[in-house]
Image (cartoon, rainbow, N blue to C red; front, side, top):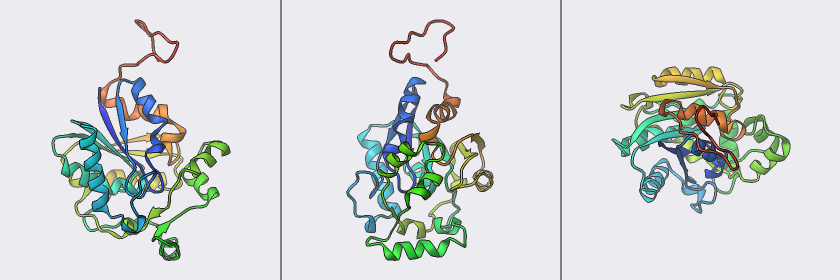
Length: 254
């Protein structure tokens, strides 16, 4: 059994991994997900969210869950947190997986990876908000986050989104992701319009390590949870568990 620590992306929360967790369990593994500060049900004031506070929250979660060794998986903008988490927990992190996620060198900021034409709108949106955050409308979220989901499911997901603290976009990375001294893997989502495949392939090459692809949009954990679980767990084997009413015997497959 392998433990997977799942770090959600911007505007999301622990809820976005709900479909993935049982798929990992069916393969004999465990997944753990938390709400980062100001996300999901976490009450932290979003105007006060920093990278350091996010890292501290992850530290507390790891200790509360009594995680020993684990695979660290990060999505989207919060790929910026993965090097800091790994450095704070030497000997515990078996592998770091960047799922359509930012890969930063020391001194680079997330805002630097926003297309230049769109960048001013981020500053304007944050300034117009009451708490220095970014929000998206439903149609934009459906196209970017919920690709491949029917409208009813996309709307249900949209209702659970929270405004994204903008301050973390402006913080320079303290360390380079490529300098991590553990196995590294990048997962490219082939239908992604938020982090397009061509960008992700460049980020994967920048990271070093292995690169995998999944035929899904940015929210692969929502639209293709079984395929994503198999991809994440591939290096660690699988011990399939029977679903309700199913019996697995010799030669059976889930």
